[in-house]
Amino acid sequence: MDGMTEASDVQTNVTMPDWEKRFRAPRVSLPEWALDAPSRALFVSNATGTYELFAWDRETGEQRQATDRPNGTTDGVLSPDGAWIWWFSDTDGDEFGVWMRQPFGGGPDEPAAPGLDPSYPAGLALGRDGTAVVGRSTEEVGSTIHVVRPGREPVEIYRHRESAGVGDLSHDGTLLAIEHTEHGDAMHSSLRVVRPDGAAVAELDDTKGGTVELGLAVLGFAPVDGDRRLLVGHQRRGRWEPLIWDVGTGDETDLDLDLPGDVSAEWYPDGSGLLIVHSFEARSELWRYDIASRKLERIDTPPGSVSGATARPDGTVEYLWSSAALAPVVRSTSGAVVLDPPGMVAPPSVPVEDAWVEGPGGRIHALVMRPEGATGPLPTVFDVHGGPTWHYSDAYAAAPAAWVDHGYAVVRVNYRGSTGYGRAWTDALKHRVGLIELEDIAAVRDWAVSSGLADPERLVLTGGSWGGYLTLLGLGTQPDAWAVGIADVPVADYVTAYHDQMEALRALDRTLFGGSPEEVPERFRASSPITHVDAVRAPVYIAAGVNDPRCPIRQIDNYVDRLAGRGAVHEVYRYDAGHGSLVVEERIKQLRLELDFAARHLASGNGTATGSATRTATGSATGTRPEGG
Image (cartoon, rainbow, N blue to C red; front, side):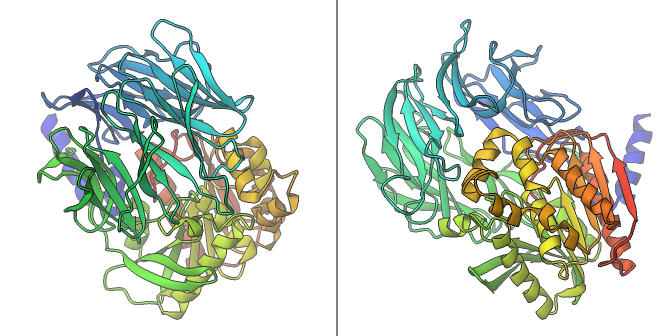
């Protein structure tokens, strides 16, 4: 029986197309290790066909699946002593729920913070004495932070209508760092350090006293008892970079690293140095910064992208690396592969090419993939990233590789609003939301056509989340530019989305637009896809999770009703999940539907057709937040 199963698996592996193998091949995240028990680790893997949490005892080598839910689980953390796994339990991907916990070695799950009602999560910090600091967000209250001690009722120590969250708890548990936006700018946080009873200790606020909006981010307290140094990310020189803030004295140590692009950091376990993650022009690399000597030393990593890194107690660094051509792997500076999942190996794809295009707001960086040996003009997919404060990088992603396998060129644009190109580039989309990004996408489209890469009659505009929003907005405001539109979990009717979405995103929208829909109706109207729906000429495909709290289903239904009312060619796929799926087969199914939709309409020359053809599909997938790309 086992031999027959193995032979069947081999045959399936031979006949399965590469694009499906890339989704099905087992993947693992960078393992998180317990601060006081470094041999105990927690990671996420799709080995069972659904992304779930796994416990790993590094001394014995034993690995155990810790969670098992139809909709998958990715949000988890280890207690400092490694005794407990905390994980967030929502319902069918709606991101609204409670923290649960289970013993590291296995056992029944139990409520981790009894007495706290379900909410959206807003950060979590676990202390060495069993104390937990839980950040929460609800529509009724806004943001709250509770201290939960073993055997006691939770105590609320913070509340504000604007968005806020838990940053970090000091090593000895005496100080708590909070990120907040009490000033009303959800894109630029300020910091407050308090005691566990909520008493204020120190403030750091870069939003005051200037005309330029600057943000701060908590990167972590020094991992030493009694050490009051807090590592902070700041934007004072127009990009993200770290500084060390002594909360006790108020002294700030500016590292002033001579590295272009954005810089993040975390502490080495003994507090003597910092592990620097440097991101520049869609690639990233690692450095070690010695605090005493102020010396910066490069850590050797291959060209590509580091999507996570951690310094171990023995001084080695473990990091999750990939490139557009090669699948992710957890490496160590010791030279070893840290965690190698068994089973199918993800096939390689093509390397990415850089394109720099002059746009209305400056040079735009685009990443281009094309089938090996292919010459243009090619059918071309413009894959628009979500966020909007995110960016595409030279990293492995199964979806764009699948389009390449089917003969398409893929162009991914890091438009204004993207991270990684400086604060001004990220903040530029405010008030003319969506329209700014589409100006950049249009400039890259013109370059792709004029360079001979892209066939102007076979251009697909697609994206998920914010990328799905830009797809629908682009189809309405640039109707002659696109032959097909494919939008995953999009914003389609912005006013309705604002009123239905989770509270933290309303705060972000007020920052982006300069107010609520009632305060600046003309800005919401100009930037809402439903305003321009009657101008849409291209066939439209929409995939939507019915439990999505970020891009809720009602506003998508409003848009679809408008398409149907005018007989526009469109298809809708609704599935029982949230903002994407953590189920591998569901991801494959969705991309197969999208590939088929594009192929049918490009082959038929129906790129700008109208008519009554409408097809609605339903599915049963569950899950939340698909991986980038």
